[in-house]
Length: 81
Image (cartoon, rainbow, N blue to C red; front, top):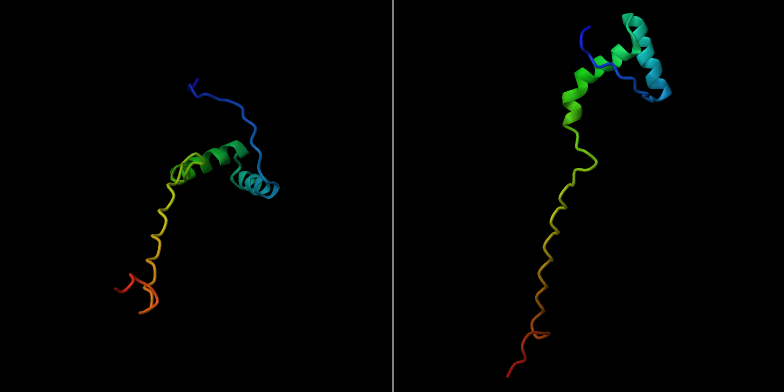
């Protein structure tokens, strides 16, 4: 025996995707399982680059508040003595 761990798992695919996988399996005279396994091997490194839903993206710092506009002459500022 090859020592592989053969486990059964149900996977659910959208109908059009499953049809495409089935057509490819027929074209290559392979099982659907084999096609999905090969697809995983090819895509694994790209999928691992995707962020997890648990990854927290740090919030961007808020933009600094705009400086108050200078008051026109004679309309504000310290009182003249």
